[in-house]
Amino acid sequence: MARKKKKNGGGGGSPAWMVTYSDMVTLLLTFFVLLLSMADINQIKFTKAIGSLRGALGVLDSKEYEDVLPLDLMAQQNNLNESLQRVYQNIKNRIDNLEVNENIKLVKDRGAVVLRLNDSLLFDSGETALKPRAAPLLREVAQLVRPLHLDMRVEGHTDNVPVSRPGISNWDISIERAVSVVKFLTSRDLLPPSRLSAAGYGDQRPLVRNDSPENRAKNRRVDFYLEQDEHYREQLPYLIDSREQYPF
Image 1: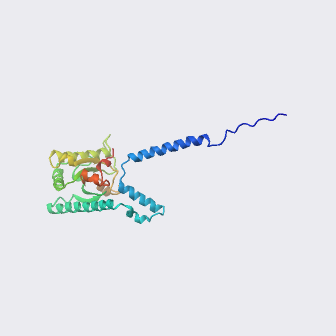
Image 2: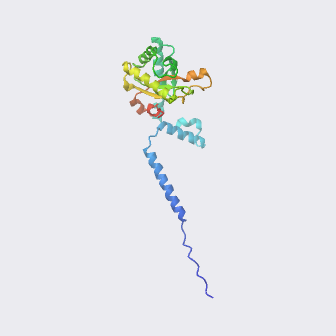
Image 3: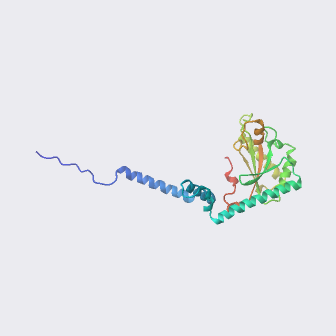
């Protein structure tokens, strides 16, 4: 009786699906390397993130992550803090000397010096046109800012109560108010347009929770953010960049 011949098993080697999978992984790796090569990495934030990751993995004490910062970047960070403090003190002294309206609050926020006004000082409820009595107040703001070598971003903020007018949102109110302020300052030649920008955030950046009439009143405001000029921002990339703050 004749024996049946055994079928050829096809030899050794990786399964066919493994070759396709390897190609896919290689392509993904190449893609992400390409993205990384084109990315604009914030060196200080990236270094701090690496330090925090090392701390989480037990390679480095998480409290010592600042030690991994290059000395030149640490020096820049210290210079920024000192510069911010000098700007803050300079404006505070001018407010005291000029006896500026007590409703103009001076605060530090997100690494910048901010002049903060409640919206009721400039606008009627739900309106975007400036009150007539807002003019002297904005002139005082311009008088404070004009001698400083700083750009100013005007930010509009609202509470979370929906606007009663159809087709109008809190986003619209906030940005239109900021633009109204910028138009006033430029049309009266109080500040050059090159130093000004406008942004609106609606109810997305409250100071406090919108859980009472008093708190909602605090959140309805116009902030005047004073920032270093563009050349200084290029040297210190972790400064606030108004181009990254726009909501749309």
